[in-house]
Image (cartoon, rainbow, N blue to C red; front, side, top):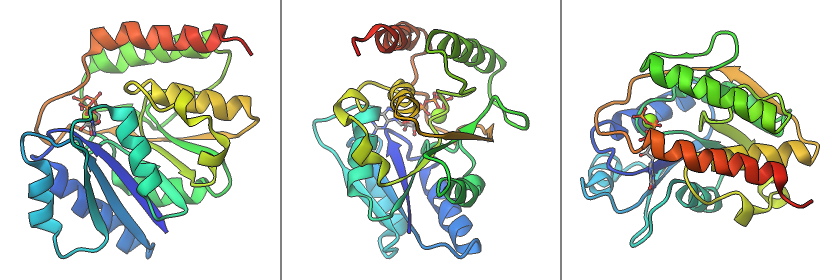
Length: 233
Ligand SMILES: Nc1nc2c(ncn2[C@@H]2O[C@H](COP(=O)(O)OP(=O)(O)OP(=O)(O)O)[C@@H](O)[C@H]2O)c(=O)[nH]1
Ligand SMILES: [Mg+2]
């Protein structure tokens, strides 16, 4: 079974459509799956909207965290609540195209982590040229500083088996924002794991607003990378 974990904050505008799309993709591929939304009590009523739309659909579960905020910790919660042996994490705003879920899940049977990557041949980003190139440059920085070879550490679209969690030092991974993925991939590579990148093209978000404060995160992400590099082993 595949569990698709969707961390969400104020995504009422587009999330129901995305969840419907994921269910359709799984059904078409004849895969057993569930969608697990982890909502941080969004003031826009994301959770209530989902309950209304998918109340009768057992394959959709909504977890509401109250008094807690944070992308990485929401994802961690979802991964632990998931019932599937195959886990997929993606954005809940439509950036990531769910058509890749079956392929990523299949590849994750052979590889330790599969990344939906903007920076391998066939990948890309429809949204913003600035974001595309800024993220590209930051990914080059990560590759150089950490001496690894992943082209998209920041995509946030990941698939892996549940058993990977047993091998991760979770408190050292799941904090902060999208930089959790840099730490996750770093731990996997250092443990001798294999990472596969499959091309994906970022789509436009389906309404709502961006939560990424690009310039603010630039500083924290840079620190995160240097911390990994110079951490005592
Ligand atoms: N549970 C939870 N989810 C969050 C939080 N912050 C962001 N998210 C979700 O994380 C995903 C990524 O955030 P986005 O705002 O889409 O970031 P982005 O993709 O870099 O920015 P856009 O290009 O504008 O989409 C989205 O699905 C958000 O709803 C949070 O504090 N808690
Ligand atoms: Mg997004």
